[in-house]
Amino acid sequence: PSQPPSLHPMSKSLDYSKWDSVELSDDDSDCHPNIEKDFWLRIKKEKREKEKEDNTKEVLGLRADVARARTELEAVSAQLATAEEPARAALAAKAKALTDAFTVSEAKAEKIVESERKRNWNVQDKFDYSAVNVKGLEITTKKAAAAAAAAAAKPIGAAGS
Image (cartoon, rainbow, N blue to C red; front, side, top):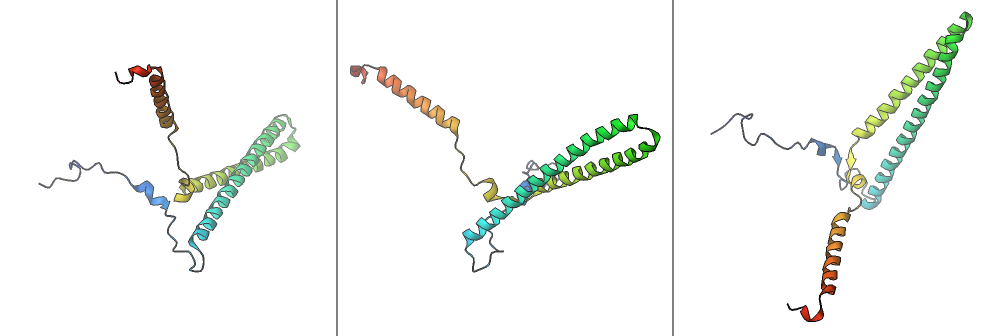
């Protein structure tokens, strides 16, 4: 008997959409036939790492610019509160320029961070090492040590009993 999709018992399917952004490392369709595959993959990985490093440096620089502009804006705002009328217009214009500058810098930094977050994953970037279950090894080692201690504590003649 056919049931509507909403009532079907298997309607809770797995969402595989997160794997759509995984870039396969063995896809060498953009590799020139005269270039070795391993060399090409290494070049691509170095390029990705360089882009990521450049983006990180740019975001850090933009955030430093924002911090500088905010401290300068606080100083200008303090001067604006105590300034006479002729200097007020110049200080207000400077405050507006600083506000615009750090707003643009914040937007740029957020755009770069968002693009890095949405960037395609590459298997070599995420899984280029093997993880070891250290806790599992510790438990196994402790059990082995306990078994060895128990065996050492037994008298030699009591081994069969």
